[in-house]
Picture 1 (cartoon, rainbow, N blue to C red):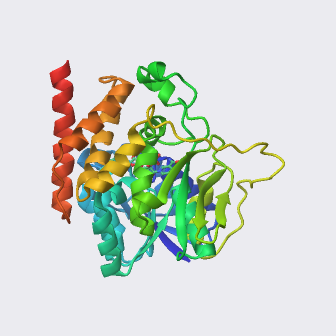
Picture 2: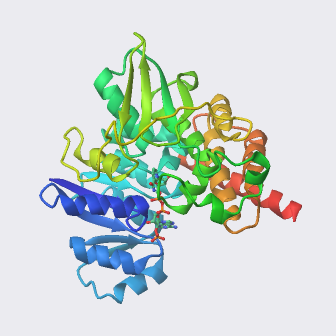
Picture 3: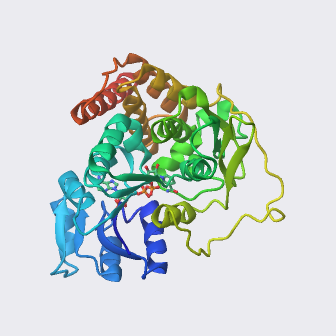
Length: 384
Ligand SMILES: NC(=O)c1ccc[n+]([C@@H]2O[C@H](COP(=O)([O-])OP(=O)(O)OC[C@H]3O[C@@H](n4cnc5c(N)ncnc54)[C@H](OP(=O)(O)O)[C@@H]3O)[C@@H](O)[C@H]2O)c1
């Protein structure tokens, strides 16, 4: 029986994790939940799964939650609460479905405490890759990716062996602007950017999929997860989102993992690994999907992926700047304070202006995040 804590239970990944948990009451027991602002939903989830440990954003949301009358539920708050929940003694598994930099400390806490960390929150690994790996080693925790591309690589490497890998291909759908002229894309409105062609996800990752900063973050995620050099990681556009990624081996064989674009499949695998459980979420039928296409990425139209390689080359805190600057710029774009094109400009400027700190501590990463946010907001103030 897996005893699971779900961080970000009210989000897209969190809700899909709970859907998987509800299908396997004999295999999964949910022992902790966290939420931000969606109190009515977390209250419903608390009741449905009989959870006794809940973490909320602040005292105001906790007060709202208490009105639902949960007398036997321990409520903790904020980042300290998230870290305590991630290391809860009665849990053996933590699903991190938090969005953005908020996910770093709880990821470290889970791994230090020896849990299996099922990681959707890629920003944690991008910002604090070295720290995450060190925490995993110290705490003897386990790191299983949920991101569909990395779940695919994880499975291909398990099947083919991690020695003798020549390179990997991360697939990218290309997002909603794949076929838009560049000029129109640069002034696209959030309502257009939020229309993802193949996946239904939270707002931040949906915008990241439109800019391809999501793929940029995933290049860095693959580097840390699998110990690949930047030269071994390539991005290829695959509009159908059926082939989730590929691994090419030294002998010329290439392995791929295929499936419908449904996050419940990699979420379930992260929980069931090394077992495979029955799932009703559909399969890849070779006849029913028609053609599968692969196209080169237009790095001139989407400069984001190149920035990931640049950040890896700069090293230290540079990937943290990329992730934090992007998170800040996406927030400003959703508030319609900057244009779509300015996301690329601002993140690129922040990256080039940064002096990386080698072998950073958590405090260095958090300081870098504040620096990147201040850099972006100052630039935006100057330009208005
Ligand atoms: N969605 C996908 O299909 C998908 C696929 C691959 C990877 N990922 C990665 O998974 C992560 C989560 O993505 P998502 O799409 O599930 O995001 P989402 O739908 O926006 O959910 C984010 C979760 O974090 C919580 N949260 C936000 N701000 C918070 C705060 N200040 N304090 C406490 N909790 C807070 C939200 O709570 P409230 O809603 O209650 O405010 C929600 O539960 C991201 O790193 C993303 O890149 C997602």
